[in-house]
Image 1 (cartoon, rainbow over the protein chains, first blue to last red):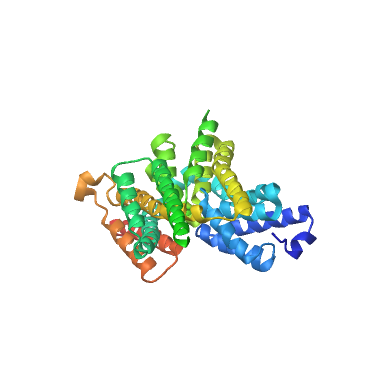
Image 2 (cartoon, rainbow over the protein chains, first blue to last red; image 1 turned 60 degrees about the vertical axis):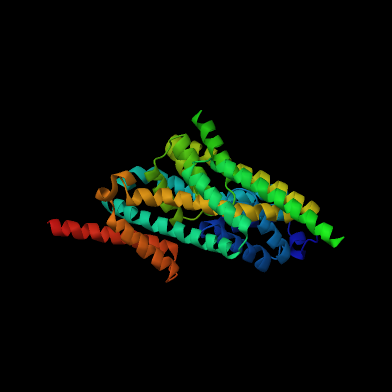
Length: 199
Length: 191
């Protein structure tokens, strides 16, 4: 892996400080989910600071998506890891988590008073319908992507896991483990077959 | 004891929420509502709403919120550390393996299969919010308690999101503001 020029020039504390303030800033002003923050991380660390090259960033994002957990946190971890190893991970996770932590702590302290308020009650009532619509909208996009792929296996997984979760109350963790196992098995079989054809 | 429970519950949420964002929802619901009874579905719905309007992932927001509610700031720290720890471990190991072997094909295969499962589980969690909003006394109670206004807001919101591509935060606030106006108007009429 070739280190880019600027990265070698800066000392570790300088890099860590820059890493912390970058993730802190991005995390504070990112509304609307993990994928937004991933594209902002790319803009900052690839296009602006040139600390990571473009293709490597794509792979790092793939890693962030493959692991469990919030994409925003995982994205910060891969960037921190790439730039400054274990210390980088610590610093960038702290930067990513601090803003939501502070905001939600404040919200939480005022929650009971907040909930009793007439205007807040009305807003929260109406927003329930809004949140449901946002979720349905997201699900619709995800599901139509899967259906358009016309992969019978994936469509079966989608239907079966809905039935298992919603009607049969199967634990979410079991569904994830069984699906992940299936995916690993099928990929290994397909890879073997692919190699067999080449011979 | 509560601190340890908070830590473990959120460790569990962090370790199994594949796919980011809404993927954590069914897991939070399972641990926080069904298993530990730290929250009602009502509070959970408010939390999801608040999460939408504040920066940060739902899982981190939930950890902070539930932690503070149950055991103060230290509880929030325990829950938040719990939810981030699996990420730190898994991502570092994967990144290390990647640097070492650069082979992502099995990982990609696993992800491709997980995506439809995660989609279904998010949908199921969404229904857990939508159905009580429409039928606060349960579906069995039927037409009597059916919330017509919620159905109108829901349909209008979906139309705005899909047809007119209006941002989710604006749509949600719009729904809330509509209800506030309706209630103010009703009070005006009563007077």
